[in-house]
Image (cartoon, rainbow, N blue to C red):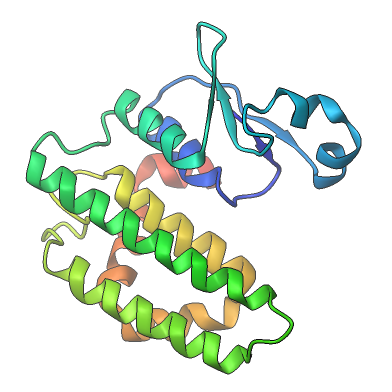
Amino acid sequence: LYYFDAAGLGEQIRLAFRVGEVPFEDVRFSSDQWKNEPTWKERAPAGVAPYLELEDGRLLCESNAILMYAAARANLIPADAVQAAFAHQAVCLLQSMFAILRRFYSETEDKNDICAALKAHCAMMDKIIGKTQSADGYVVGHNISYADLFIFTALKKALATRRPELVDEVFAACPTLKRICEVVESHPKVKAYYA
């Protein structure tokens, strides 16, 4: 896996491989290396990171495609078609959240409006995901899935990095999302990864 030395779009992929005990090489580079050493960008199929070199040498791009590959290899996709659909729904809802997070980089948009939009989106996600959440705390079923990892990395890593002051507010208003993050954070393989 080729990605920046940051959580970003690579963290849920790294976690999927680690939780599933799938061997992979975690190649990290700095933003400066990406800009100044053309090898990284030239090798990237779409000119962006992350990208994954498969065992046969082919390169896979797009973080969601790589996540699905990692999840399939790690058995983190629910076997039941309905549960798999609800897991994917959770991931799609989170991808919409990233569009809101990107608005924080705008010079013209009011930050309070963005915060309100983010909180409203998280509350909507919490309500929808809460309808499928298992008693074990996962998005669906009794085992951790790629959707749980995505929620954890989106909220505990991406949001906490970009807007740390919002994490507690979101968790106070979104018990479903908070519970998922707690369950993932306490998973032995996730704990070992961050140890």
